[in-house]
Image 1 (tube, rainbow, N blue to C red):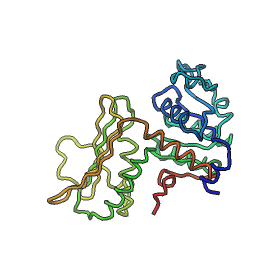
Image 2: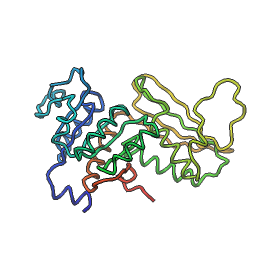
Image 3: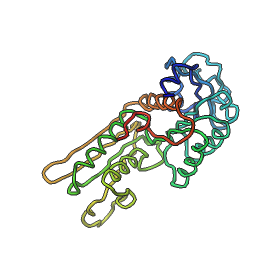
Image 4: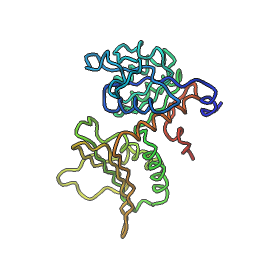
Length: 278
């Protein structure tokens, strides 16, 4: 059964949100409330959060009947899917609980180590997950464009990735920037780890041929800007995506929730959700 068929023949999908008191959590809750085909079933936050005990939709001036809780089991009890945009350690704990409870996951958390990604991969054998460093539909279409550009432009084009985010972001480069580098490297039959340059300072010498450079900007309330520069001789190609709000991340997350209705186990990403696979 396809995800669309599953949705048309069943009750609304019941969604829990981690980090419910935060900016992204609230954006997700508002999007779920407006969706028409999804319903809020749980709201999680850290112990000590001022939102604990409050109705999850109080900020919208309405009652959902779902109180924000730090009790993971209670927050997942009525859910089909958990959307998680928190921190790697918290997401891993949530994922283990979800696998035990049979609750699917949509994960937008960034900053995972390779070992942590392997842990999530193992848990996906018990319950289906969508893991993506950026849930925005536009960003994932941008990744597809980068894949095409990387295949078409030869190694005479130098590649630089520039990203900018708000002052509160704790990881760098962003997960999206790293994903862009991975997509480019894979499209050219290489590995990002063999090509990435994350720091330049002092007398660096000439640019290493084939390298993929990263530059990071942190400041203000920038939601997320990413530009990939392919610099050749006599021309350059720039592919840019800019986010003006987190609404795009929320809408992409809901598309991932709907996609998972047709899955039981396995690890997926937004290329699967948006049918962007070759």
